Image 1: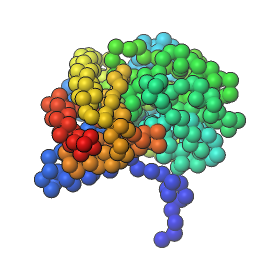
Image 2 (image 1 turned 180 degrees about the vertical axis):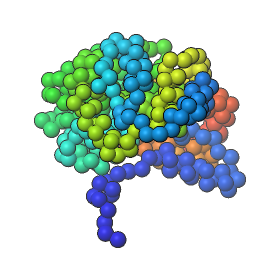
Image 3 (image 1 turned 45 degrees about the vertical axis):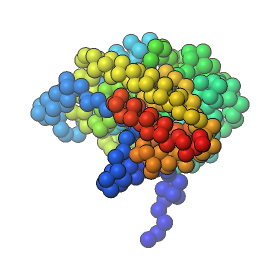
Length: 390
Ligand code: PLP
């Protein structure tokens, strides 16, 4: 067979999927596994959202739909952004995608040429770096520092900017550290982007999962009209990972071209899914509030538990549903520790290095699981700890 396109050999997989595969293999061989690897809420989609999806199918919304999103969902998104961000985007600034990831891919493809430099947090969501490689852009990972509570430091961004910087990716609340950037930090990054004329992709997929802190966005500076692009979706806040529904809000010329790209690629996001999305945004948010309250309880239990383990120390995350303990005092690498925990104790978590070189010395635990599972896991790790603390 002839070689495939070059980009196909540059694109990378995701650690979470690989760990889940190995954990499932161990389960089939009879081992009990406690799962902390996947970033997916363990709550079901709210009933009224499911019902809206079913009704939309029954009402016949099963054919092709307009590329870019139905006006009814766009209007609800306009209302939502006005409420959460304080500006009202035009409908021409909005494009709906099958999931947030399509929004990340489309934004990168729509803004970056081969050789352009893309800055993103390290550790960070692996898709950012992988897609850089794929499109031929130059990945510039910016280290997150524990002493800065893993918030991206605008000075570190400034130090790595060059004439070739095209895109800065922000993610707050952040995967995998749960850090939340402050208003002044976001303003500083937005100012930098303005001065150097580059784009910002603000990945806000966890913006509704926050603990006792306010949400801010870099998009308010230009109201997503000139250079900032807001990315959000329904996967996390409304437990809709499998429905595949996300969107971006950005400058009209970019959105117009991405609609044309949509016409040529996946045509549209299924309309019954979009109608379920309308119900999610306009209906009761009790389930979201209940989920966030539950996550907060679990966060406190897992952070306290991890801090009891010899060689582990864990900061308290302010958003998302991940704990990110520092394990460097154990003397084991992230990969060795993750393998040991899986093989010895049946605990599936991710090595920090799955999120970039800056994740060495850390693990990621998704606490989208029961308090009982969290307590069991802490007991198991405490038992295992004699192997590195002896
Ligand atoms: N952005 C971040 C930081 C994520 O962690 C995820 C999913 O884990 C996504 C985007 C994509 O979410 P989805 O494609 O399910 O909407």
